Image (cartoon, rainbow, N blue to C red; front, side, top):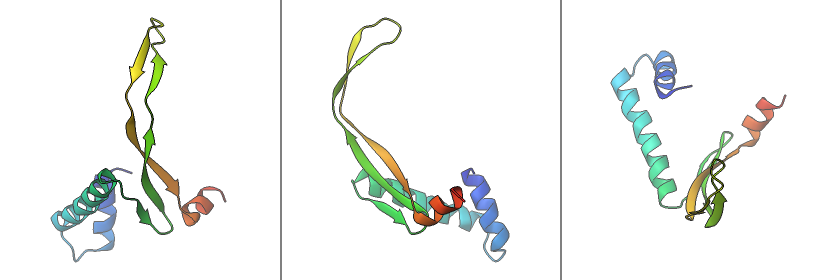
Length: 92
């Protein structure tokens, strides 16, 4: 599902809201999730899942074409863990 498809579904279930209002609401929610994760916080939606940030340490990698060894810097990566309801629905 894309952001525009989500907006369409919300608009279909809430005819009293305008599409522009729904776009703003969805954007605010997504921006809040991004800002929270960028500051290292965990974001949880009960029943759906939790987003968190994990750290990867610095490592040496190998270029598969040339075999050259490269230094890969430490970095933070997003992580998602499915909530119980989502997990159960996927594994009926």
